[in-house]
Length: 497
Ligand code: HEM
Image 1 (spheres, protein in one colour):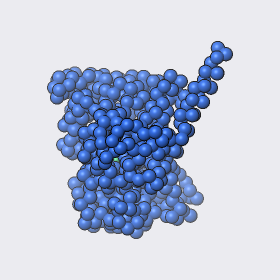
Image 2 (image 1 turned 135 degrees about the horizontal axis):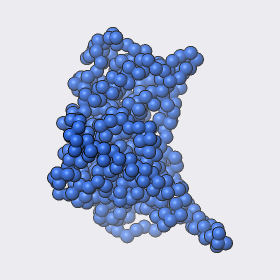
Image 3 (image 1 turned 90 degrees about the horizontal axis):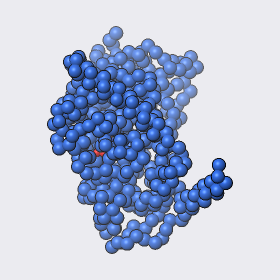
Image 4 (image 1 turned 60 degrees about the vertical axis):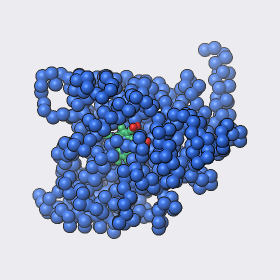
């Protein structure tokens, strides 16, 4: 090894630490009125939505931070979110180029991580017109119901943990597995193998990790966290896996086997028919889109169900109210069917309240401005990153009456506020051009899984654990989930065998 290497590395490291810990610069960028920089990367901590919420209490709803070398605006109120996601949505509609989009997403060939432009527009159109439509949500209804029915049966029989002779289930694991089965069947037509799950899990973990290379690009060559190398390895494994699955689908289509169409069948027929709006869909685009759909659909749905359960376990009275509604609307002689879901008003309020306090993507997905713009008299240059703190907005006392920290589904009674992205005080699915195109699909799964589990079982905490002891700690990732698994005791309550 050259004797200069350690010296060179030390110089680079010292430089990096100086950049990251440097007091925020007081010099302002040019413009009519520039936003002063009030923070930098090291202020984010392990739960950035909480740290940024605290900062916004000191510095207001529109803040300017320098994250590594990236100028970033952080928005923490409903009114400010409306300015950025509605008034100036056309400017803040791109995504920053990251190592995830380059390596895992085939150089930005997918949708969720790709920059704004004709490619993203065509992919988005394809998704909303061919895959995530109302008709497709209905089409997969029977499969979803079957999967949930199977999970209920398994929970009646099996137990995951003996706690002082009580038989508890690990609800976090069970719901993760159920949602994974539902999502994977919708996209790939059949359940994934253990190997499939391992590779996809690792890819999603990396997509959700904090990656220094994205904030201090000149450090990419050193890859101090090793994420770049791991990403390249996983992307190879993922690519081989997706190729194998696509080949299998093409072979079956040629032999005209199977009449059930999953997302891959639909995408392959679009690729072969040469009839995909204004672009030619190719194999890499399909593979990148598959990863987008897995990344966006898997953890978000399961995590929302588990947060709802945890809140209900903390509030037995609210849990009872939700179960009473299920009993009144459906009765105890049958399971929940998808057609019941519109009639379950209180259940839907529980879901809104869960997503208000626990938006699974608390900072949404980062955006980037495509040109200079003036917002609220502030000059915001092109390529500024935009973070919307939906978590902070959901607990803003100016937007929510009573105690905004309190879980109270009743606050939505007689209220028009919905999850569509039109009401900026409640934006867990984002809003505007980049708002979530899977809202209907995601919401339908959350309603069905949560409704069915509440309907089929009574639930108790382990002996000796009182509702107020329940740990609500979070862990940061692609979706912000409960840090600890939820172990609870189910007792079947339906009067059918
Ligand atoms: C409870 C469930 C879900 C939640 C809370 C959720 C939330 C979100 C959020 C916050 C964004 C970013 C929005 C923005 O930048 O304004 C997003 C984007 C996206 N979501 Fe979802 N999502 C859910 C389920 C799904 C499902 C089931 C799918 C598809 C299978 C999906 C597909 C997508 C895609 C493709 C994007 C990227 C859109 C783009 O960049 O143009 N989501 N989602």
